[in-house]
Amino acid sequence: MVTFPKDFVWGAATSGPQTEGNFHKQHQNVFDYWFATDPAAFDSGVGPDTASNFYNDYETDLALMEKAGIKGLRTSIQWTRLIDDFETASLNPDGVAFYNHVIDAMLAHHIKPYLNLHHFDLPVELYEQYGGWESKHVVELFVKFAAQCFKLFGDRVDDWFTFNEPKVVVDGQYLYGWHYPCLKDGPKAVQVAYNMNLASAKAIARFHEICPDKAHKIGIILNLTPAYAATDDSADVAAAEFAELWSNNLFLDPAVLGHFPAKLVATLDHDGVLWDATAAELAIIAANPVDYLGVNYYHPFRVERPDISPKSLQPWLPDIYFKEYAMPGRVMNVDRGWEIYPQAMTDIADNIRENYHNIPWFISENGMGVAGEERFMAADGVVQDDYRIDFMKAHLTALAKGIDAGSNCKGYFVWTAIDCWSWNHAYHNRYGLIRDDIHTQEKTLKKSAGWFNRLSETGTFEE
Image 1 (cartoon, one colour):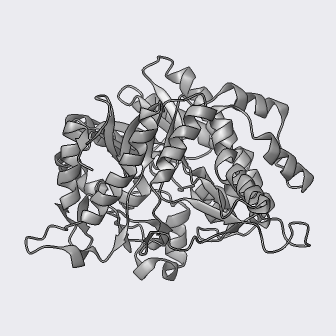
Image 2: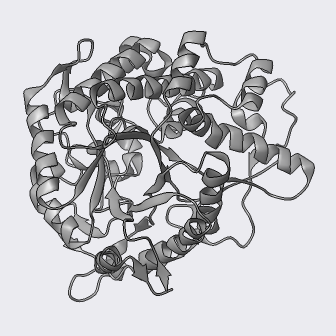
């Protein structure tokens, strides 16, 4: 029997742009624009226009989530829906009304709101005018937007987050070309990473001015993918050390410790790509650590030495220092192309306990996306997703080991409650405890929803 503390929070995570649809939204974010101009870049040509229709269905969606035992819901406020003028952060009345209704409905269904302010969804106008997160002016505009959110909804929402997976913005938009604007520019990526850390710290400072009482908490959601060396050879170990610095510590250290890792700064400086920073900005980062941390975990990051020396004449990218390694015999989620490695949950818990002041944290995303789930549908129409239950059991068992060792983990939020639109993968893989027929928007509980409800009620499960 695996048992969790009585005050452990059982929740689900999602985001505004992946669920709401674009109904009555006055601005486009970068994904809206990308789909409008290049729909072929999206799986089966499915864009964000309808998503899972949360804009219209939130009352019935939340009722289903309550039946699935979801007691906390992390979603995001869309900058492009709430704000009319990005320079002044003037409010859109329809956007304000929508999020007020959603928050009130969450509370009516006994679901605690956890609100995030940025989930990959930069307004495209700010990219076109300023280069997006390359610009420190955009940092200031984000803080204005954040302040409006705290003022509007802080009376009912205690738990806030500045960014979801800022590293994915760096990777997808600026390094590897899988999110719009699909750039491959290492030095720009470095500056973007710095600016997003600065934006988070500045938003945290405003949060504590507007919501000073201790009941209100603010954090950041980071996708921590522990870097494991392919072998014990010193060159592979060195590759894993840099991969850990770049992939995890780049955001984790400033968020919790208030400074960037010295080894990473030294390498970037030596390579001539270190970000533009001022002493005043670094002081803001140092003075505004997060209150707590959300951790998204799906897969490990295995690396080995690069094929060629980083001293070779080549454009600067972080992976001149490492090469991804596919471990023979690994267990895979073949549909998504990710290794399944639950042990990392224990390793993450131990790392936060030992190296990050044992700060309060929770699993803010974990789940299994599977394609073609209709093949697992029984005669009664219920998806028999035992593979998802097994995935959660394995990861929760590993997480419990970290908690038993003293790690200060406070909850587990599955990705996700209802099948949602997953960026350019659209609906190829389904992650939800609740199935969404995207043609009819009929939503039904999967087998995993019943299992999760029992887990949420008892805090225990049989291994």
